Length: 323
Image (cartoon, rainbow, N blue to C red; front, side, top):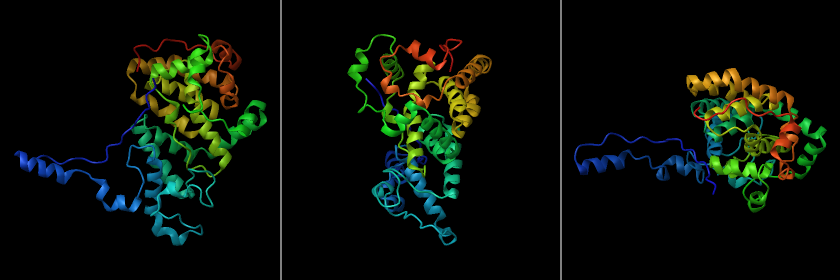
């Protein structure tokens, strides 16, 4: 029923084929990028190749390797680069299972690289995730404080609910009445062929509670699509990013909101600027913090009633035929 998104980054190019079948085959084999037998693969062991869910882990390892000559200038112990990063997920010094400790310089390099890749390909959600983790410390602290001050938000911080196919009762959601939030969320997943299991784990946030805050933000992203009535095409994602930028103040949301429109057609850009951005900004300002909503306890609530509670109005125009 659901299809997991997969994003692939080309990491090898083949050379031109020589004339003749034998020469063609030989040259094809010689130009094939076989990382399974290269020193790089031997160095990184079990690290996944680019395009896999573990791309951020591989990026962090590459950064650590590049900065290793500067180890003598740092007073902190330098993480080993010849050990698979996930293998030490429960070692002392790590704050949560997927945590990768990084210095400010390493975070800056990761932020720069992930920002460039995210702008080049907005659908590289792994790069968007790295950018959010390495640039959002102040915003995450403000969001955490808002959650602590709200009864429902404080309950979420205490109970740490997760949203995935293993925690969702799909049969129950399917049995809910038409128009209920849970039923509409399930419809969104089905129509747009997305899955909640595609959200990358937090790795580069050096605070366990803030790591959960950004993980929660990622996992409720599709629920914001449902509340706002936005599809998952480029235009829909940009509109949601404007709403999230106002709500969260996360630099990655602001970056996506400002630079995402460069890929739009002239018609879509006009609709975005004249109608959708003002609508998203107004709703983002009017709505309470969306991280304070315990969505899992709102499945049976009518979507219309939930929108009214949050002050979210219907979008001003249909998006059919737009990017």
